[in-house]
Image 1 (cartoon, rainbow, N blue to C red):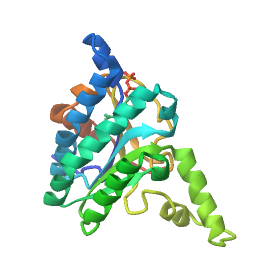
Image 2 (image 1 turned 135 degrees about the vertical axis):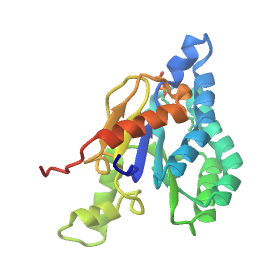
Image 3 (image 1 turned 90 degrees about the vertical axis):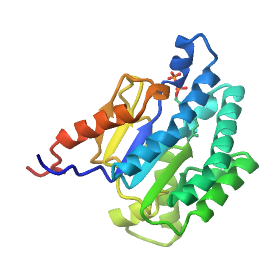
Length: 229
Ligand code: FPP
């Protein structure tokens, strides 16, 4: 059997929390809470299987259109998650990154994100990147404006990559989207240019090690040619 080469970077579109809760006659926020509860195990299993970087889509620039109560609840889950998880990031030598515009987030959440980023900046082997207030078009527009402001008349692909939130990370080579939807939804479109796209009907709160192993087996079976033959 040929040796398993893990994806270097997996992006998760964690979809289906609301439907998971509805199936149980519970409010949508219950689904978000359960969705947050599975994250730690999934990230650990990714790193254990040799994946260097994990990106999670937690809150998109489009998610502001949800009811304020739901937006506040998701921010509250993120605050609780970071409070509990900071020590584990350090103990497990995981570098924490955020993709997205932190300036528009509640002050306390922004400060916690910045604290986790600086507390883990010495680590280089494993990464957790959370996309909050993130959209790929907004990220690319911000990058172009930064490049113009730097005085460049012409840019290379490497310049653009370096101006993105993910400048420290390899390209995403596997996207996993749960809940049966088959879209990228403004998720790291530049970084996913050559990614394999894996869609599963499993709802995010039910996603676990076994489901991840299935996705990794599927990834291993794909022939990756990057436009060659
Ligand atoms: C999509 O499900 C999920 C979200 C928009 C929020 C994801 C947030 C979390 C899992 C919790 C916080 C994250 C971290 C990193 C701690 P949906 O609400 O669109 O579900 P539906 O399509 O079934 O309605």
